[in-house]
Image 1 (cartoon, one colour):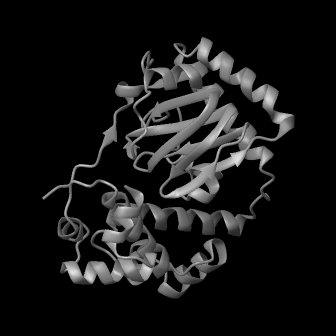
Image 2 (tube, helix red, strand yellow; image 1 turned 45 degrees about the vertical axis):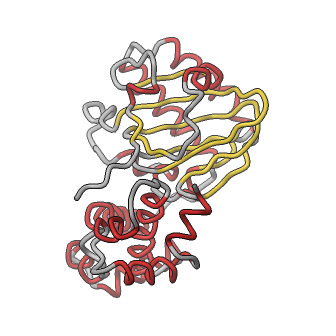
Length: 284
């Protein structure tokens, strides 16, 4: 049994898409996609800069108040919805998962930017005033010359670097680079295996390190144990599935590799504080 989650395809919402990328003003994008308010996930990268407007938007069940000059990044697979208020404006960029594949030597390069960490807490922030003019100008140029794929690659990476620089993150030491690479590999492995591998020792073996090393690394960088990170990923997927009302709780438990429905319910309530049914009622 394979569950089908509402996935918004790039071609469905992107209109005049060129070679795997779309750049559009927010007002025009919303006018074309006025019914896109239900929880859904994309199969592409999605970033949005607000320059005007208000309301709320939610990414993986974390809700944010919209303010001008807020920007958010979403990776493929994350669930989001929005509720806008007033006159909205800004810029939207959608690009395919493989957009940088032939342009960058390292296919995992996007993961080096903090806002592509996979954690919602890193994906939403405010653009500092000193960077606003140059970032808007770059968005305008990117929209004008989006058919030039090399220009689009370079411009988008330029925006990423400007935004990463303005976050004032400390430069990592060599040891930090090694540990963060390990952590990124751990998170990637969870993404691939969370349905079947639930123990830190399984992931530590795949990374050729000890479970103690893995746990210490997770505690130091993320403030959670390796086991908690694995369980949180399973819990997140359960929440994503629960907002789609067509599937029974037992079906979701089966998809996530729980032995029975009652065990899944206990797992969910321990992590979220409510039963799956209560969570679904609240979010749908």
